[in-house]
Length: 99
Image (cartoon, rainbow, N blue to C red):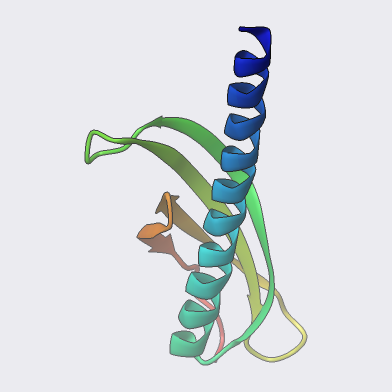
């Protein structure tokens, strides 16, 4: 019985790690797409908040907030925020910047 619980715990940890990686890769893709639309250079993407819970659809999942830094002129850096539920982009907050 103990070995069954060990496999369940190990399997859960592996699944959560895999899901977190999937969300991070989706955030990178969304940040790249957003910077291409704004015609700016993407500098970096970092996760600031991540929590497990029920999504708006009623299913369990991960709600995440990612900050992405971009530059429009190569000297100044601006920060935008991606709000995500699992791999789905819910909203983007981009500050005014020079083009």
